[in-house]
Length: 421
Image (tube, rainbow, N blue to C red; front, side, top):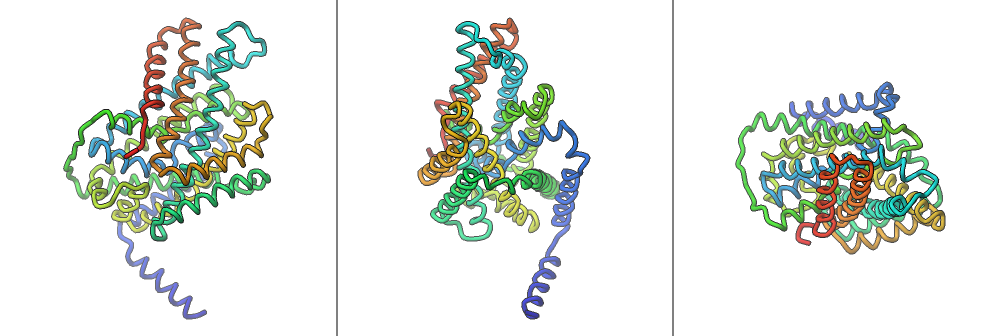
């Protein structure tokens, strides 16, 4: 026993001595941001409470996937692709915010007046069903990415074992939620979001320091083709999640929900753009490995030992809690839109079965593309509602924007594809 303790102490001392100045900066940045986000005064702020929910959905570990994927299709111009995705998402968010302010009073009034109102109600109902299926697919994405990070970060990558672990996690969530046994996981939401944002902040700080010390770029451009646009359209899932503000009516008033969506999109957009911009000088490291969902671990480890550890550990909690949240949301939507014919409990099990099939029949990038199509279809229906309501209420200044968004989202729904898919 004493020998084991001496070995552990020796390991800690050796690890401590290996820490560089960058490692210390990463550690201080992480702990400082974590302390700020867990500040009780911040947690009591109503707007922050409302903002954390969509922000947690938007800023998942998807930022780790988007870097190698955007580099694969756009080279060192990846930041422009990210800018397009962020801008598109914000404009789509404006359509949802328009619906929250102007369409919801029409949709949820008790009396049904005319074909126009009936069409709006049916379109809203269909969009909610589509959103439920989109959440199902996103659960497969979250847990598949979690498994990939576990094996790439701590073991040897093995696709079969990764799929087995993902299947086990899906079934655990589905069965546990069926038995109402996941209440104990609620506390992870608070810490999961704080850990996730703190790691991202530390990553951005370390990338900034690295870029200052090793200033220099070797731009590699890749031709933009129709396939490039298809793949770019297929990663809309990366910035999905802002729509959750729309479904927080029981907890927050209209103005808070609208402002929380807007704030979450602005903060997440700044994070994504900063991340891609700062990591661009290190993209050449990705040339040494095949395109994988965990390629970013190589870059993180090359910058800092501490960062490499945080990147391996941090996403695990955030991916699992995001999967739990989306499963609950999907089950609730299925129950609501089937008017109780399918209970939430049964819905959880059905969702788990669908996810297991998806896990074994598609790779991570195909799952991203599938989910992006589903979310794009949902957003398209929502922008269609916004377009019709804007025209009906004579708010004609919004009509060209919503018409454009409907067309773009229709393109994504039809033509979005995964890398090599």
